[in-house]
Every structure is written in structure tokens, then in C-alpha cells.
Image 1 (cartoon, rainbow, N blue to C red):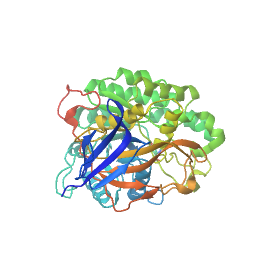
Image 2 (cartoon, rainbow, N blue to C red; image 1 turned 90 degrees about the horizontal axis):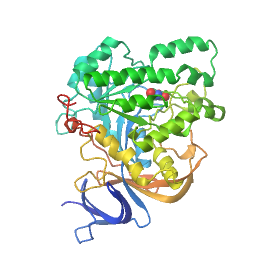
Image 3 (cartoon, rainbow, N blue to C red; image 1 turned 135 degrees about the vertical axis):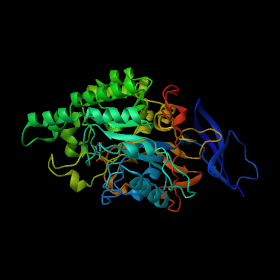
Image 4 (cartoon, helix red, strand yellow; image 1 turned 180 degrees about the vertical axis):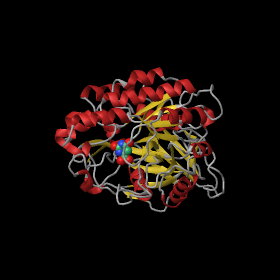
Length: 462
Ligand code: DOR
């Protein structure tokens, strides 16, 4: 018999505004909004006084499995997701070995089916020599329990190197990838030769402040400009990962409708001024820029130049992070704190819950063609998060679910926290506890919908 759950009396963040209403779930789907109780409901969740949002979709996380499970793995990363209201993650390929072919991707999908508490998808990484694998990733066979094939969300290119050894920066290889593949492409945009030249200029014994001189605005704009040019010439959908500099924004705007972009919370909440306080704990790639850049990135979210928020959750242990620069690795964990950080901003009057649902759920679902995801609407997947906008809590390293066990926001008091998360209609997090038996599913990607701008030109899946 179908299982029905009624979530009663929440302020529900719907695609067209917030309404005080009930949401009825049936098995893994939303059956109806504005439904009343009837005897077929096996469970009623009283949600009066709280807000119900679509589950967060984080389109950029690094969960380190295989290869660096001491920092994080698919299980621990997905538990952190559930606690943070993230019901779907898309994971990057810079694991060890990297996910650059069918075999390694299939391994990740099968592993996630076993251990992931939330829904998942995995990008295929580009190399100088894996064009065939990039083309074939539209139909990854044998990874669904039912033997169906899966289309991966997209292709990831490291146009500049970061953690791991993935790098494609030769023009010839980039032209081939943009001209002869069908999946949407996303890229880490920091120009490799600019970074190398800056590193040489900074000289020996660089300090953490030098990180932002090495990976400067020019490194970001040269690479973003190059990638946007490729997208426009080849009419290929392209997503700029973690935009960090004000000067990238005009490039992103010029790329419409082929180009979309995202911002990470650290690039609008932190700036180079934070090195004095946090040191290598706020070392990441792309590197932090000026306060003016941080303000510009936030304003670009508000004005729609940037469509979505992702975390670039990149866990390293605190011992690794405390090494002296440049031995310290780049990256910070954020997947379980991103939603509270944004809810806190909503409480400060800096944005609305509708904007948060747009940036963190609807937009990533549209960019990556995630079927049934991103909205509270009848027929959509029952991936939901209930938040208490009055709850104040201090970010505490001792209560992080991520294996790396620390947060650059530790000590900050945030108001607005997730109190319950549903994945496919099942409660996976409630009263600060994880329900360990819940498992997510592989996302289904339908790229024929044309992405965020509903692009109908172009060929094939593009
Ligand atoms: O700072 C970063 N760390 N940026 C990236 O793009 C990769 C990430 C990681 O995997 O550690």
C-alpha cells in the first residue's frame, strides 16, 4: 500500500511565493500541495511555525572517495548533506584515481547506491585523452539496480589545476571537447600559465596572503574568458564554477544563453581581509579576492547574473590545513553549513527564502536537467527540508557531521537551521539525529530540456 505523509501547517516555499499550507507526500513523491488530512495518511508531521523548502541541491562537492577517505567519503559526506538540508549532491571527479572513465564512474554510482543518505550524481572529468569516455557518459550502463543506464550530469574540466592532477589547458584539447561532446560542461576557471607566472613572481617562501596574488583576478578572468568564448563559438552549454572576481561578471553576462554561473558562500562571505583571522583555514581555489569582489559576487546573485549557490565542499583535515603555506591544501568544508548561513542572511533581511530556494534548489535542478527535483510541486520528488527560522545555534567543530570535523565558520552564531530533512519521502534527519537506514538514488538528468535558459538551439543533448 502506498505510504502517505501529511506535512501540516508549514509556511511552504512554493515556486510562486510562500503559502501557509499542507503538503501531502505519497511514497517518494509530492502528491499534492494544499491538501487536507484524510484517513489514508499514515503519518502527520506538525510543522506549524516552520518553513518548508525544497531540498538543497549542491552541484559542487568533493567527497574524496576513492583515495582520501580519511578526509571524507561518500557515506560521511552524504550524512553531512542530510544534516545540512542538502538532499542531492553532484560530486566532482578529482578523486584518486579520478573519475574519468566508465569504470570509475560506475564504481562511484554503485558505491553511492550502497552508502549515500541523499541523492547523488557524478561528473566525468576531462583529460587530454578521454574524448570517447566523455561522449559515452550520456549513457553509463549497468549502474542502476534495475540495469538501466544513467546520464551523468556533465563534464568537469580543470582549466587550471587545483587539488588532484586533472588539468586540460591546451587550446586544441579544449576545442575538441567543446566541439564534439554533448553533455553540459563546467570548469574550474583559473588560468594555469597566469598562476605559474604569478607564483614565480611571488618568489620563494610565499605567505598565505600570496595565495590570492598567485591565483589573482587575472588568472580567473583569463580562464573564464577563454571558456565563455569556447561555449559561444561551439554553442555549447557551459557552467562557470565558483565565480570569485567582479571582472568575471561581464564575461558571464556576455555568455548568455549558453553560460550559467555559480557562487560559493566563501566568495561572498569572506575576502582577503580574512587571512589575518583564519590563515590557511580560508585557503581555497579560486582564491579569495577583495571585499569589493565579494560584494560584487553577492550582488550578481541578487541581480541574476549568477544563477546558483554551491559549496565546493572540499574537506581536508585540520592538521593538513594547519601546515605552513604553501604545504597547506586548498579547500574548505561547507556542505552542512551553507543553508544555515543563507537562512541567517535571510533573517538579516539580506535575501528572501524564495531567493534561497531559487539559488539552492530550482536553479541547480534546471542547469543540470535534474528530473523531478528543485521545487515543491505535485509530481516532484519528495526531497524537502523543514527549517526553524528562530533557532539560534553556534557553528561548532564538535558537532559537524563531515569527517574532517571543522568549519571555517566555527564560533559564529547563526539564526535559522534545518530541523528535518526528507529524501524521497523518507525522513533522513530529525531532532539532530540521522536516520541511518535511508538511502538516496542516482539523479536522472534530462539535458534535452535545454538547461537553465531552456535553450532549444544547438544539437543533440546540448
Ligand atoms: O579549493 C579547492 N579545493 N578548490 C577546488 O577546486 C578543489 C578543491 C579540492 O578538491 O580540494
